[in-house]
Image (cartoon, rainbow, N blue to C red):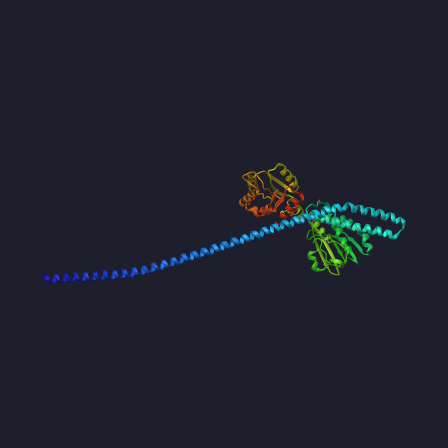
Length: 472
């Protein structure tokens, strides 16, 4: 019995041992398989990491190539921008010199021309007493030619003044009907001489703020053109108040030759004429309408032209009435565009360390608006901080280049634009005594919008300020 139990116990123990050995063997087998799988996955992971590194390097290379490409494009863009600024500056200088020349030459010619006209009128009167018709016609031709030449010179001078912003316009409350009637009266004899009917019809209109001399010049130029280009028929001059538009209109309508539609878009360009060369139907320099348009706009009005070839032309001038909402708003708080156009009410900042130069610049610009001055960079930054915190932005910045250390005009301009983003679009004009073109070009390349050389000419300064503000 005992032997039997011992045998069973040993048999059971042997079975258990065999099961344990089988389990251990199976576990080692599975562990080996797992290790093989793990090694294979690790190898795949290493390969993936390697591919990822290569892809990352490729991406970084592509990014660097694109960045370099962008830098080159930006560099080319800056070069183009600099070239355009330089070309614009040369064009403005050329235009200013042209206007100065025309203004000076007109003044120089005016005196002897007045003498010629005066003496020819005296000669005409004396010859008429001698009853010599042939000599009288000669004297009349001299007087008429002199008058035409003087009229041309006056127009050239006015156009030059307008482009150089040297035209003085004084707006005051005026009766438009009286101005229109007086201007039209001047041409009745000339219209009768050409057997044209010159009609005037005035309706009740409100008063308007205009410059009487300038408006007379405008109406005279348009009526004179109408008579010149009308062979038969009539010329009607009328006034009317358009209540729906809250505008006063002065209309000059003729039955003349009319204007070709292709010429209408450029009709207000100075020295442009519909017919050029020896075949021109009428004489003229093409200055009347451009001058009229500029003067009307200076008086806060606008001008429109309608025309058809062989039918006639209608020129209409519009002005806001003095009591209109638009006019009241203009008087109380002009918009930035209105201020820029008239060069009035500007906020100007001047940085100049030389006392006499600062006084000169202040006197030159004080009529344009409110002028703030500073003598160095530290004072400039303090003023900029105070004005910006108060909500004020300057319209134009005039910076001297040579300032007390550690500042200079270029660094100061760049620091202001960096600190206050609003000044990235505000014009900065460098004042420089440099005469070399290369130095001036460096200023434009550094970020200045324009420059002016010392000693400063007031007309040139006004022209630069006007040109820069008109770009905004």
